[in-house]
Image 1 (tube, rainbow, N blue to C red):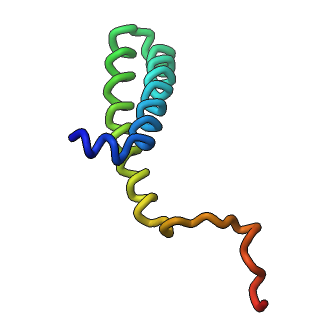
Image 2 (cartoon, helix red, strand yellow):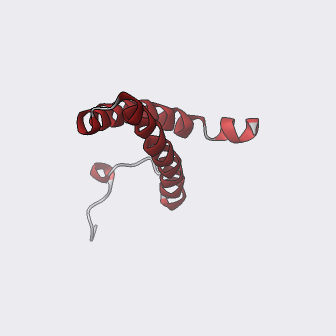
Length: 82
């Protein structure tokens, strides 16, 4: 498990940050809609937890689909036909 955490540290940190922001927003929206603090708390933990797992998997899928070691930007690329 430690190897997994080390290998995915940046993505895990990004996921945790996203999770905290999402909990705050979800709680505020749920309270505004329901007016019930307990319901807002429950919803603000349930939905962002599922989303955090989906976000992590989404990030890993994007990493897998990206070209390895791509260091040049589109601005650095040679124009077609040269």
